[in-house]
Picture 1: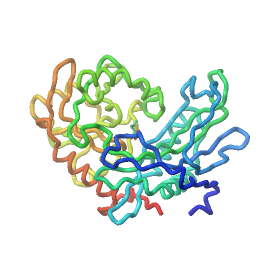
Picture 2: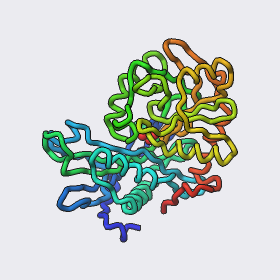
Picture 3: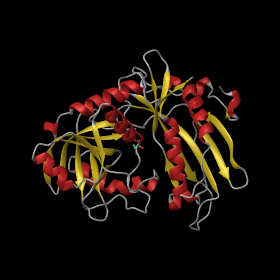
Picture 4: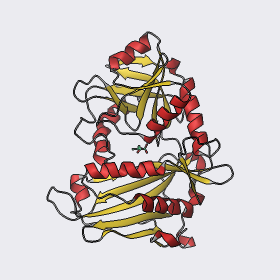
Length: 360
Ligand code: COI
């Protein structure tokens, strides 16, 4: 596995290895594994010095451009262990390709898909003892690219780091798979067409924090964003895409340039479609959603994302009024999608879409 990588591999000494966290209290993204992947880019050499090495701090110039102008992109993906101990990843090439879409928009260099996939698999395999066994617990991978050239002019950096760190995680929300309460904001906006809302760049998340804090203070888990022009059409939830089951349709907002092209979103569309459900990608206004809650045609709503998987929505709050969805319970389709996706990801179920990649 290591020989054909052209990546240097330095393993931790046994005394450098960290104690594994309690599997029942992993939280999300607070523990990190023993190793990481790092490679560097500059104009003369392209990507070079690729290494898998012990997890370590970076030493960077305070003028590194990422600190000043936020040229930073990332991905979120997961590795899973089956009951038999086989390791799988879910659609990893799609994440790498999406990172290249983000790189293009942010004037950053492309990463080589095949090589990064190999590096990812090697890294996951090396730290395989960190993949948690618990129900719903997984190993989360965070591929990230940052601008490291020390310079204060506003222009693309001429030097970058690309790295992958890994974290054993439990459910993203404290609610686990229980329905979340979502705060619809018409005060703040996330993204506008022509901007960067469709790519996974750090600034999108920084800009979302204030609205999320207001939602949390009011007792809500996440923010539902509306379009930036009319503050009328539903876009996405803080860390996931959103779906509404209204009558016989499963409706999700279309990817119009301000919404992230979620890989879980796409998986839901394909999976539900294969079950004969009429999946419709169209604009849906918040007033239509509320009317459907009030007349009982909205049967369930859920978010989809790598971190959040499928997260049922039990309540919306819009303009200070609360709307309970599906009696505040998990809907039947949300449950089915969650079970099926998890079963495919964990290798417990056939994978008709060829989404799952074996590691090791
Ligand atoms: C993911 O779902 O992997 C994400 O990147 C969301 C994250 C910001 C927690």
